[in-house]
Amino acid sequence: MTEKELAVCNECGSLFFKGSSQMMGLCPECAHILYGYPNCPHHFQNGRCTNCYWDGSKSEYIKKQNQQEETIMPTAEWLNKYQSIKDKLACKTDLDAYFTEKVIGNMGVDVLDIGTVHFPTGTIFACDPLVELEDASPFLQTIPAGTYPVKICVVPSEKYGDRYACVKVEVSPEKPVRYELGMTGKEDLDEELEEDECFGFGVDAGMGCVADIQTQAAFQTYWAKRLEEDPDIDPYNDLFCDLLEENSKAHPKYQLSYGDWLNWTVPDTDCNLPIFHSGWGDGAYPVYFGYDAKDEVCAVYVHFINIEDDYQEQA
Image (cartoon, rainbow, N blue to C red; front, side, top):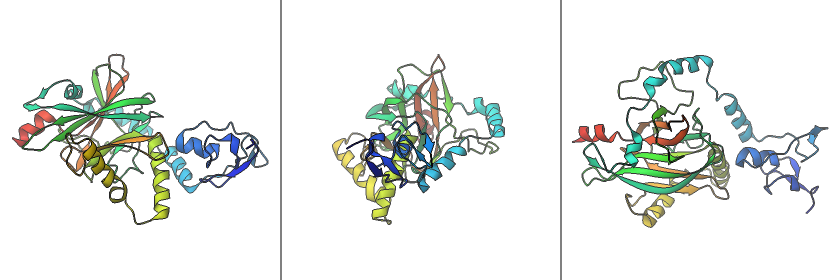
């Protein structure tokens, strides 16, 4: 195989030099956009890059991605409005205590480790993975790219069942001194929020997840190929249902038989997706970025249950 041997990109359809890409079936441009591999330093002449032979083609999927990226930044009006109410949106609960204390309010708590999550870009999102995994918008706040432990604060209870109160992505061992609400820039800031309400991601299938936008792109590519084979499939019944049940058998602690958490890797990638049951079930749930004394992100929290308040109300 020589550098000048040509191949056809499975994504955009352009010819490219095989030796110019780190993925056999993708040109360097598509491999970079979809999976984060190094791109070619393109130099175009007569309609083609002289380095990789890519002709500038883009698939409909990548065109859609580019359009989304162009509209991701909020307007100046939105940003000004956000700055004026930002402090009111901060979390007043010490979420890190959920992972360091044995008792919160009148409820005992425990911590479940579910592995790690890889954030190759540090631009992340949270959503119901059975409903919005392909379309969820990323947060404006970012974290350093890396691989981090994922933990779940569980409230064990015979009366209410074992409930997942909060998920923590531990970016560093530092303790947060403030919590900033994760925002996508699409929230309606003119909406009147009640005292106990906040902006968050919607849950319609009882599950949540937190992942990197590169994982989202990898899943979109994977699922598009699955849909080509069978257009009638859906993510729960034809993918996550069996995987959740298998994981429950392998790790039964704080899980029902149908499965309450899963740490799944998109096939043929290093992009993984931690999935977990969403506390009381369907609803809207906030994500908070914890900042340490140096004003650096030390953790990300998906907050499902205000243990002290919610269980007092349930009693």
